[in-house]
Amino acid sequence: MLKLSNLKKSFGGVKAVNNCTFHVDKGKITALIGPNGSGKTTLFNLVFGVLKADSGKIIFDKNELTNLSIQKISNLGISRIFQQSRLFDNLTIKENMLLAFDNEDTKLFKSIFGLNKTTK
Image (cartoon, rainbow, N blue to C red; front, top):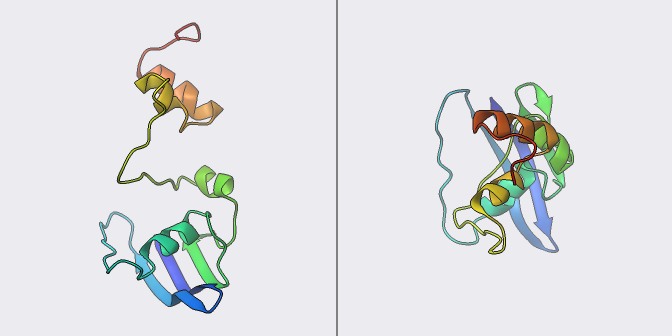
């Protein structure tokens, strides 16, 4: 479950997220919609640790995420993808995908796709 309680984030005098409270139950699909500039991206940046909240709490599966580093949040199993992918032109598809994994995940990726350590 993901739970946000009284989450706030301001940039100068602009309140990008103001007292946001909601929860998403495990196994449920939920959409966050709103016009440009309504705070959707800021909210996701708070959840994923890209930005630090001014106040409030973010809880995921009984773990408080509020103000954790991106790495710690990722280690808890939370990640994001972007609507528009940005690939490195000089890398293969496989190499682009491997960039998203840490060392342990790379081992899993290689075992799933039957790759060994000498595969380039």
